[in-house]
Length: 242
Image (cartoon, rainbow, N blue to C red; front, side, top):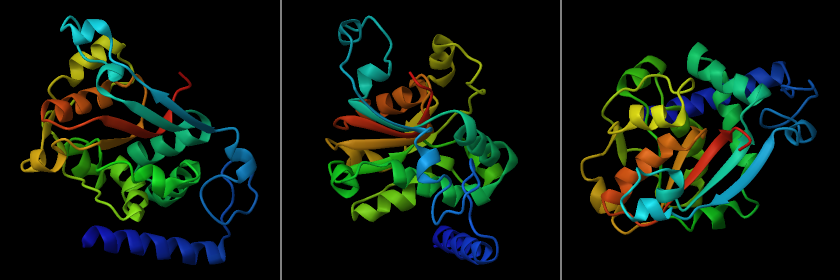
């Protein structure tokens, strides 16, 4: 209830602010009605990359640790992780600029498939990668949940924020090589109490703000698969151009 109240308060605060100071594209400065970028500038950042995966033979033979391609069925990447999109995510994460949250939420919606509700409707359970309790307490929110939960709730299905929990904090990953990332992430997620019944045999959509090497999503997807979920798919706001 408090979360819905805060979202509503932020929304109406933004509306009042924009009546006085019209919203402008973060790149070109032209007046816009919604989101963070105008349609023309969005073309320079949109990625909309859909990747389908098949598990490697060495993973299936038990000779390799899981990578994203082994435990994810597919992933949809909405924006390029550079320029104004990268700057906005850093502003939210490290400088606490929550005014950017509703703008990125609208950007996520702008980049979703045209038949958004039909695309979302193929998943039984939709959830997000959780941050550590310490970071959540410091920020007051989980970034993936803030970006995607209001959007995903539109589908009329079940969005569940409490499928996974982070049971161990991890060091910052951006400077680590892929093998170091996997080692750092190993065992950092666990299934939340009571979540096994929810995901058993179900198609799960796992959401995150940034998809870099896929190590974080692979670790989370591995927990879901071991707990008996069906196929796990990914959705991320931004990713480097792989």
